[in-house]
Structures are given as structure tokens and as C-alpha cells.
Length: 351
Image (cartoon, rainbow, N blue to C red):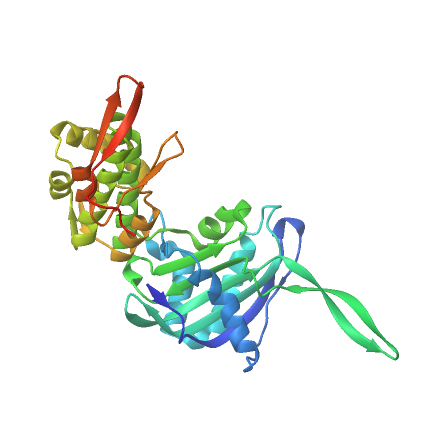
């Protein structure tokens, strides 16, 4: 979890990169931006708002040979060691981004490199480096007085409503390649930002492992449990799975299977499904890990607990008390009507 409420911008440099394939230039500022009390809150909101509104899917710097060969890892490490080098290193970062700007689709734009302090991540107060890029310009009217009338002049500028690209690199977990958050509003050139410029991959921490495993479990329920049983059993299986994650700090696969799946044949199906599709979810070698409570909460919100029937009737199951569905709902087949039915037991209707 991150908290940017008390984060301070210590220094900010703004540069500009063009598209290298179109022979557009690069502009490097020699002086930092002078921040005022009027500009600071606006630019902080411009930079940080996208990270407050999206899931915290962390990345980390990587390299096929060794992390020390990752150019961005080395550049940001220099800044963390000595923040006074931000002016020099911000230019190197911008030049590195310019060198990756070869595809015709890549737009020119302003590059913001800033050193941040008082950033909260995983209950630690650390420094961070923000790298942002604005690409899309918005039209706006500038109104000027001209003697007896007002005149409209059409201008172009940067909209504070939308950041095109950005990343926050936290001075945290350096040995693993730092924890990094990234946003990208323009998906057509995603490889340019994440792969070519940053060279990052998903940060495989407890949040990553919990999300991936729960997604794997959800698809197993849809692909195997639902066809073999029914919607009720699919929902109950998912609920037992999420409850296991919710009440445990550590995941252990054998315990999970014994607690969640009573049928030995279905346990075997689960293992076969993992052997066949585990690599797709990055869980092929995952059998024990620490559980992330926030990832479990997110997963619970996404699980559909409603059985929708083709007779325009829906049955909502209580995922907090799954034993109710197991005890008081029965599914059967009516020979006369040639239809399935759900039989629901209750004492009285709730107001």
C-alpha cells in the first residue's frame, strides 16, 4: 500500500523529447522548475492522481543477464545515493527515453523527472523518483480584452486531467530491483514505456502471488467446477477458496486442497489443471507464499455471488455465510416440467 498525502516534491526538472525516427529534437533544461505555492498542489495532483485511482500492480527492474546491466536501475540508484545529482541524471534519463523513441507511433512530449520525499509504502517512509510524460495537447480559449470587446484566442496546452505516462520508483526493495508503479494511458505503445525504456517485469511479492493464484482458482472454478457441477457449486467453491485466503497468513497448497476440495477426483483435476495452465498464471511452481490481505479483499469484490436463471429469476448467495447455501439450497430436476429447480428452505422472510 502507498500513501502520497504527505509526499513532497524536492526538485523537478522538465525536459522534452521528440520522435527520433522523425528527426524531432530533444530539449534538456539546465535549471529546475521554480515551484510556487500555486503550482505545487496542482502539479502534485497531476502526477499522483493516476496512482491513487488504479490497482497497485508493482513492477521491478530486470535484466536477462544481471540487474546491474539495467540502465534505468543504475541511473535511479545514483539519484537515491546522492539526490543532488538529479540535474545530471534527469538528462541521462531523458536521453535514454529519446533513444527508445523510434517507432512512428510514439509522440513527442514533455518529460518530468522529480525527486520525492516522505513517501509511504508498505508502512515504510522512503524517497522516490517520479518520471512522467505528457503527450496529448488540449485546445483551450484565452480571453483578452481589446478596447470595447473581448477576443478569443485558440491555444494548446497540457490538460491537468490526464497524465499520459508515468512511473514512481520507490527506494524500497533495491535488491529485487526496486518496487515501481507505472501508468500508461496510451496502450498502443506500451512496450516502448515498460519494456524498452524502463525494462521492468511484475514484482513477485505476496500481492502478486495472491492475485495470480486467486485468478487461477477463479478460472479453474469456471472451466472445471461449473461444467462438472452447477453454478451454485462454483460459487461455493470460490467462496471456500477466498475464505481460506482470508483466514490464513500463509498459503500452503496441500492444506488448501484438503480444506477447500473434499472430492479426491476434483483434487486430481485441480493438479492437472495447474500442470497444464499454471505457467499462464505464473503459479506453476507456486505452492506456498505469504498471503496479501488487500489482494484477497479485491478478489472477493470481483466474485459474482448471484445465480442468474433463464426464467428471469436471480438467487443471491451470502458469501460471508456459505454454509447457508450448502444447507438450505437444493437443486433438482422436475420430470413433469422438464426443468431444473432450486429448492430453498427458510423460516421467515427478512424485512
